[in-house]
Structure formats: C-alpha cells, structure tokens
Image (cartoon, rainbow, N blue to C red; front, side, top):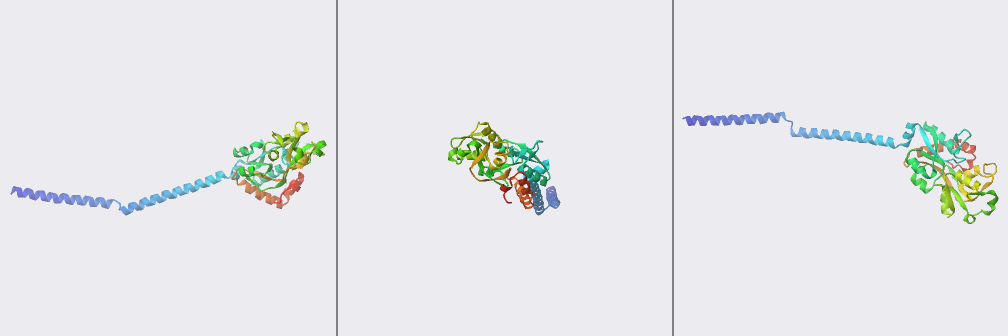
Length: 302
C-alpha cells in the first residue's frame, strides 16, 4: 500500500513539473519579439546606417569639390597672385613701382570681377609650373606662349594675343643677319624656359640662358652676346628708335605663336577668365587697354 501511494505521488509530481516547464517557455516566447520583428529592426538599422553613410559621403564630396575650387580658394583669401617677369609692354613697373602693362591691367580687371585684388610676384620663368603647384602663385599671366609643354602642365585660357619670336642684333649689323642660315655662328642670350629658348634649340643655335628677356637684351647691348631671341611684342616696345635700346633692332622672325594665361591643372578659374575675355572684348575694354600699350594689332578676337 505504501508503495502504491509513493508511486502515485511521484507521477503527480512529474505532471506538475512538466506543466510548470511548459508555462515558463510560453511566457518567455510571449515576452520575446518574433523573429520577423527582429529582421525588420535589423533592416531598419542597416537602412539608417546606409542613409547616414550616404549623407556623409555626399557631404564629403561637396567639401572636396569646394576644396578643389581655385575660384573658392582665391575668393576666400581675397587675392589673385599673378606670376610675372619684367616684360614690357605686358608686365612692367612705372616710376612709382606699380605693375602696369597690358597683361597687368587686364589681370587687375579680372581680379576685380572676382571681388579680389591682384598681387604681382616676379618668378623664375623656368619654375613657373612649380610655383603654380606650390600655390605661391595662382596664375601665370606674362605673355606666355601656348606651347604643348605649357598646355599639358597647366589649365590654360583661350589665346588672347598673337606673337612671334624674333632675333635681336645690333642695328649696325642688321644687314648681315636676314635669314636663319646667317645666324648659325652667333651666340644668343635667351630667357630660360621660354619660347625663345625653344627656338634656339629648334634651330641648333649656340645660346646662354638668362633669367628674363630683358636680361637677354642687356647681354646684346653690353656685347656679351651677339644676339637675343625675344617676343615680338616686347621687341616692338623696347628696341629701336625712341626706346632704351635705340642701337638694337630685330630682324628674323622665327615662328608664329599665341599667348594664354595658365592656372593650376583642373582650375575653374580658366573658364571664368575665358568668360571675362569674351565680355571685355565685346564691350571694347580689352581693345582700349591694348591701345594704351600699343598692342591692339596683336589682340585675338574673343
């Protein structure tokens, strides 16, 4: 009888424990979110993260675009730094030390159109690309010939002036040097990195590089060079009767070329300058400026 009672109690206890276990599991499932809800929340979180990342990427792109804009850079610092050499009639100083000339005056007008000032810095012409990339200057605006080398290294404006490289010799010897063949035995002075140096190389002339075209003229005047190769616009302004080099003249023209302004590669200032050139040519201010310095015949229609 005792064994029967004990067996009955054991069976009742087992049923009770099983019921308790079932109730506990049921309660836990009721308290826990369904598997579908968990997936939805995970998807929503991932979507939010993706949205945040997309916004961050967009903001970064905008920031990068602004940082890459030369226009924004120049306007932020309030000045357009123009790399030049002493090159009459394009860039040279008046009696008070102010930079004037066709290029200088046009650069001032362009800077004003941007709401900034134009600051002029004399550079070593051979290092003009390094000056641009190092941001010591913002553009090269100095009767710069649009060669393949220049256009591959800079973001250039459209051509605004025609030019040529011409040979400078003493006026009393001009009759001896009227063609390229007659120049072969001369020793030339040319500006380093210039179109004049390129012509000296192309014609296999013997030459010495100097820092500026004006220095090349000085070498010929002093007799330390037989001849120089400089821009025709400079020659017209600085050589011959009524100039500082009345005893020099120009004879042989070696090529035909065009001037442009150079900015850092990819700069948005080049397109802005093209628009400025078009507007200033249309309203006559470009021609008026050119007439001031006697270069109106060289101006290229915009």
